Amino acid sequence: MVIYSSGTTGLPKGILITHRNFVAQMILSGKRGFNMITPEDITLSSNPCTHLSGIWVSSVSFAVGATVVAAPSSDPDVILPAIEKYKVTVMLLFPTYALKLLQSPLLEKVDTSSFETIIIGGSTAPAVVARGVIEKLKLQSYMHMYGMTETTAAVTMSSRGNLDYVSAGVPVAMSDMKVVDVRSGEKLGPRQEGEICIRSPLCVPGYLNRPQATAALYDNEGFLRSGDIGYYDEKGRFYIVDRQKEMIKCMDLAVSPAEVEGILQQHVSVKEVAVAGVPHAEYGEGARAFVVLHQDDTHIVTEEELAKLVSDQLAPHKHLHGGVEFVTSIPKSDTGKYLRRTLRDNFLKAKA
Image (cartoon, rainbow, N blue to C red; front, side):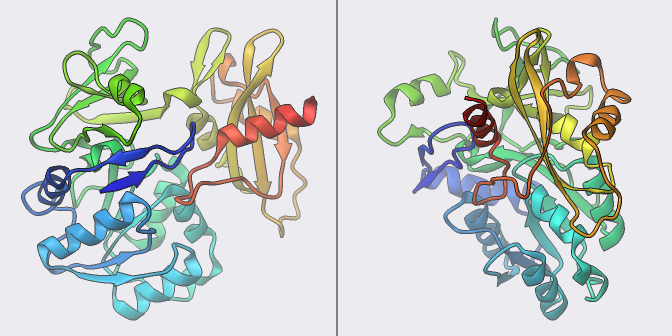
């Protein structure tokens, strides 16, 4: 099977997924592994089947004997009535759609009492969004997964019955993971940030007609280079910081766009926000926030107000040295990931 990557950090690549990869994922995500979905579950599958997540959730559900409800989109106007009508118990949702769900007026009007478990994937949800989902939906489980198309979806996940929204859980069985220094390749210890690398039966053989990209995908120990920055703790739980290619280099220090976005999302007037690095004459790069405000908000938000929100909580190199820009929408991939590269390119074109 060939599934194309989302292309958030470059051109989409055709990723070769073998039968072995896919069968391993169904077994390790099912009752012999994460126990993500049980035979008693009613699963809502709302992600497109052109994306691995859409195929993965449905296939794991079928493999364990669960019921699957197929929805045409992840918009709240579609999924909330479906949860009420079909008594849905579990669903995979990307963070941007989780935010939309929280902001939907329909949430207070439908019966979501059957809904027990949310699986969050694609990226890490800001803490304010994770807490909101847990509280509003009265969840029993918040399962944060980490993976990518190159690992045939999830390679770590928090356990069912857990409400830990900070970590991405522990590695799946039969898998080895390490964190290495991005420059030297040296293995790092607990709570040291570096590139996450994976060796597992879930890891794909490579890319379609891309021999150079395939050769660069693995290190000399057979570990897949994820391109993601993160760390693990003393209990083996992994924490995802951001995509390596999307990290901002300010004052010679790394800045995670997701961390800054999480702070800005705390503001009640902010509907959506994406942060990208833009050139800065003194610091090399600076974080620039692209902000969508709630249309019905009577409070007039200023750039200074949002910049202060960040500077009050984060170190100087993480401040909004690139400024704040109010926009009507944020470009996204078909899975709801922010296209930060597009925001940066548009900013540079406007300045040219």
